[in-house]
Length: 321
Ligand code: ADP
Ligand code: MG
Image 1: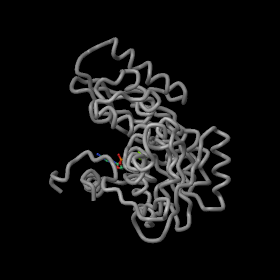
Image 2 (image 1 turned 180 degrees about the horizontal axis):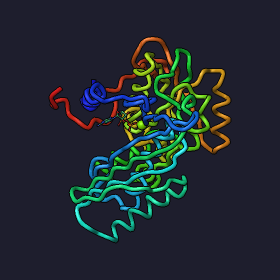
Image 3 (image 1 turned 135 degrees about the horizontal axis):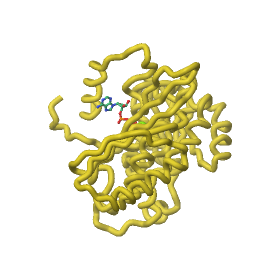
Image 4 (image 1 turned 45 degrees about the horizontal axis):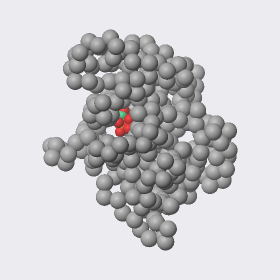
């Protein structure tokens, strides 16, 4: 198992669970007992300079992304966002930086009606942690553990743009503006997540790469998957710049797409597609859930295609287990 997840598993084993917790560690967000049939949905995500964004990223983009990655986790639960807190660790007290950061943060918060209700401010290497809160009817929450043999695997939007932008940045090459926009200003699929309630059997947002994140759904559901790589949806910007076979590793193992990957019974596929189309969100079937475990990827000829690296890793394998 990946080192990050073996650490999380250690934490999960020792975590106190109470009657208030409907769903604890292990999904995109936790569910707490709310009033009536409603659950309070809670998630938290950290951005570290140089790890989650290039150090020269504009502060407004950092502000946007810090909230976006959290709203994406709420979207993956089918939740309606309500509020958030903001913990900022800053190398220096720079009012102009904060104002610019807030331009991005508040623009996205305003677009989704998310109140900023608290936080913390400390000095240190640049690091931003947002905790986001939302609501969903507990029975309708989109979890990772509901995928079933025969379900169709779908994704919203397109995959691979942000990973291509990261690759250009790492190689010191100029980045296409459309690709860089996907890295800097991800659009959390909040409305799409809510539209999939009662339709999708399982859902996750793609933050670490399709294989890694779909892998979490498969592990939680006790099933396997077969993916048809030529079906992976690509933006025109990516298609213009990267040949199909070089796109696949970006789309499968690159992170930062913040699209939703979800599973629907075949009979519900058209309904899911129509619901998302009404929101202007593309929905592409990319494979199916099979019995067993793991993911088999197939190319145009149906040949198996293997990818060595399956997702972003925060820790090298040398960290003690
Ligand atoms: P995501 O990519 O959706 O944000 P992660 O892969 O970061 O999810 O985390 C997987 C699960 O582990 C989530 O339920 C998350 O809340 C939980 N988790 C991660 N780190 C910790 C931690 N330090 N303490 C408790 N729970 C954690
Ligand atoms: Mg997630």
